[in-house]
Image 1: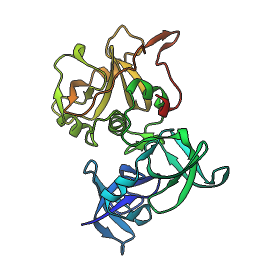
Image 2: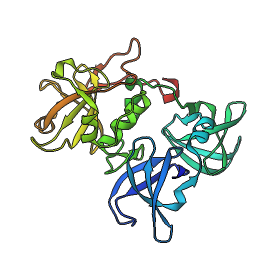
Image 3: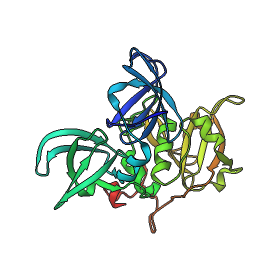
Image 4: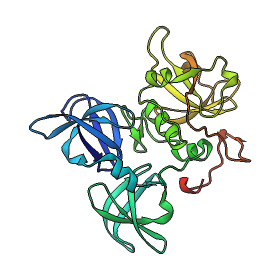
Length: 292
């Protein structure tokens, strides 16, 4: 089996080997893949993610051949900020690459408050040291959610440039140390049912859809009836009708709640609370994700 590593900040996975075909998902820099097919004389690759098993077609320019275990052993850091311009020198210089939240790379040198990264294709670039975090670090949901609010909805999106509902859920839980599948219905199948919405804890999932059909929308519970989801944009809603964040049309399609099987859990930071203010509710924000 041929394997590789995603070498660009984000590559699109399409249903067919054609730029006009439906966007079904995206892969992030540093994620390992299996190359399971080719088309158009090798210009298109069919990839299967070795993290969640999801498959689709992408152009060959976004992947480099590599052995996943060796790469993951070296690449022990992730981008902590939502968006970073990585430069050719510690003091600045040309932009080598933009980097996105949760991109993975190898830390090869430090100079003062700057860090040098080697990307999967061998390019080297510099970023601020506090724009990185250990690859296995866990980020509490309530520290992360405020930074993602307002990011637009994108069908198939899995990055801070645009999320679909299940892409947001997968990335939020991954940052908190919980692995779940890519799509909403598969995420439901990976959960243990939570019989009462009143028993929901931070990190549990809420599912929506037409009765008797597959789950088509998913959200992450944040506690106290609040949940975050991507619908038009990343937003917060509430399960209780007397709350200003209650969405009557959405809650008509509420079907079930579930708790992901296994993995770490991540709720509020010690001492953090939801805060009432005119116009709605907000979360205290500590700034950079890396400092959560």
